[in-house]
Image 1 (cartoon, rainbow, N blue to C red):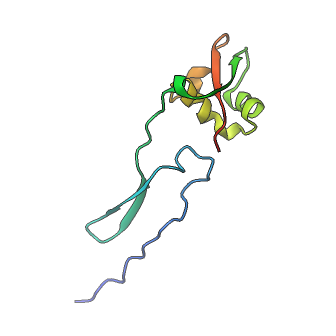
Image 2 (image 1 turned 60 degrees about the horizontal axis):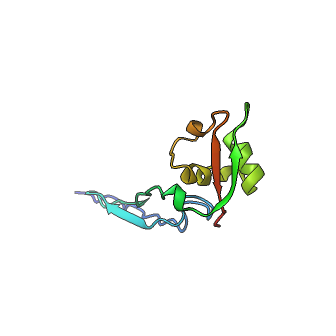
Image 3 (image 1 turned 30 degrees about the vertical axis):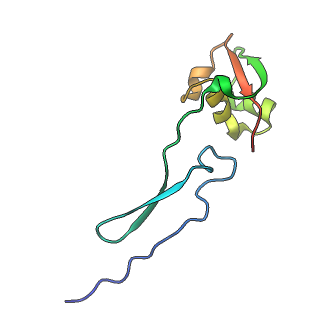
Length: 109
C-alpha cells in the first residue's frame, strides 16, 4: 500500500484588506476528514445603523450610484458597505431610489 503525499496547509495572514467589512472578523478553521484545513471568517452581523455616528445625510437624485456617493462622501467607492450598514440594508441597490435620504456614517478605518 502506498501512502499519499501530505496535504499542504495554507494559512492566510490576511484574507481581506484592512478596509474590508470582513477584516476584523475572527478566523476559524475546519479540518476535513482527509486532513485538509479550511480557514474561513466567522459570520458578520449587521450593526444597528441608527447607532452609528453620522457624518452626513445625502438625498439620492436620479442617476446616482452608491459607489459615486461613497467616493464623494467617504473618499473610497469600495466603502459602499458602510453606507449599507448605516441604512440597515444588505443589498446596495435597495438604497438608490431618488428622493431617499441616506445616512453616511463617520468612517472608521
